[in-house]
Image (cartoon, rainbow, N blue to C red; front, top):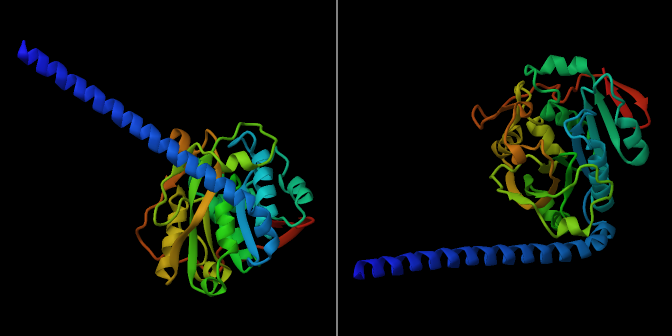
Length: 326
């Protein structure tokens, strides 16, 4: 009888400890969410001041994509992020439209018409087929980014994604950088925050998107692939991302940050970016064939040729602020 009583007491203690642990977890989660929302509100409220200060340097943002079904509402997403980023920070937006499907219209024309500062570089299938050895990859993301990185004119250049908005705290951090800090050999990475984004949503990014999140992706020492910012001179010193990778997409970003380190640069976190969540992301349903093979941090530093970023290609103007590589 005594043994049964002791076991019952032990079981009660275990259940009580489990309940306490669950309550404590929920409390800490709620506390973190409230703190996140509070910081988001504070930084959002200061955006207008930051945008008008004029303190930050000229900043280019390079993003890539194509008009396919990788995301059903890709055009809506890139419009939302362009509007946000250009309104709050970016002075030289660059879109590289890589390997456009022959049966779809180019995104270039409508985007360039809607965003007067946008520059678009169209890379045709013929170039894609020369550099791609993975039949599952229709978009060589980092080869495409190199096209934009090479042709950016701003003092600072960020490589980012078409479905990524720079978070208010990151905008403020960039604005508040001291001139002495800006003169250093430095690359900036940012933590990725996935935010809920309903497919087909036509409304722009706003306050609510800065106050809540779906998940926060742990930040590695070499970033998350959604944001890497450095001086234009540093990008040219490392010759962009590794163009020896002909079958890869995952991990290419980390090699770029590691390459900067090997050239004497510091890599520091500057804040967060907001990623518009979608089912085709590797954080949603894991890595799939269309994400390409994964690159590692071996065989560094890498060596690109002098014509990295399709530097030997001729530019043919096909529209206002739109060029096709030939």
